[in-house]
Image (tube, rainbow, N blue to C red; front, side, top):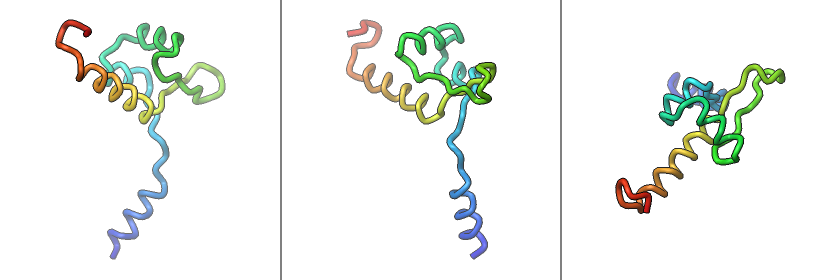
Length: 84
C-alpha cells in the first residue's frame, strides 16, 4: 500500500527534464559549436532560457531525444557510408 502512495507522489511531481549543453554534447556526440549552429539554422531544438538572462540555457530532454530518434530513423534507410 505504501508503494502505491509513493509511486503516485513521484509521478505527479515529475517536471520535464532539462539538459544542459554538456548533457546535449554527450547525448549527440556533436560539438558545442555544431549544436549552436544547428540551432541557429533551425535544424536542432532551440534552447530554453532558464533564468531570463540568456546566461543559463537548457534543452528539453524530450526534444533532444526526438531529434536523435528522427536522425536514427532517417539513417536506417540509407546505405552505410553513402548518405544515400
